[in-house]
Length: 216
Image (cartoon, rainbow, N blue to C red; front, side):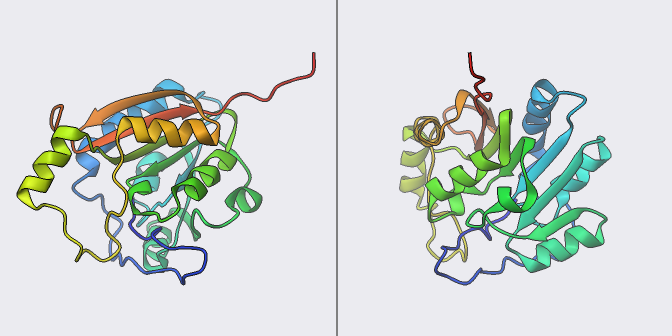
């Protein structure tokens, strides 16, 4: 996971610094949902996963330990360096790059706690869509924002503009569904992670790219 995708095509990449390839606090409540989705949606014969915004490679390391062939990109040079030092396959790159031309397509693309950091969510979603092979699955997570949680956050003054590379977009299931549908995904499912409704920490979206249509 990374905040380092918060760049625009016109701006230089910003650096989100990493020193170790270890999970952060969010992984404890996110990973079980993501791994369950992977188990449910991934064909055992096609266990290739692309991690968009892989940060320090912690999730790549977890996937590798479970027998997945995983590769990822992140704009953070320190994150990629740490990931590579831990034996993972990661390269510098972002959702604003033509990643499908560079890496091809994958049965499964994951992107954890990234979309809330990007300035251009449509560019990000198109990049994810292009990376997923026809009939494949995208698994995305982002902090959950609904009416009651937003109200609680506003009342407590939890939002801070002082977090470098912090959250700049706040997603609900409805707004995330709209983005995914607009991009071309279908069969969307959502699970909530961390705490109980209406104050979960994050949500995990599972979206399917339509299979390639064949001529009649």
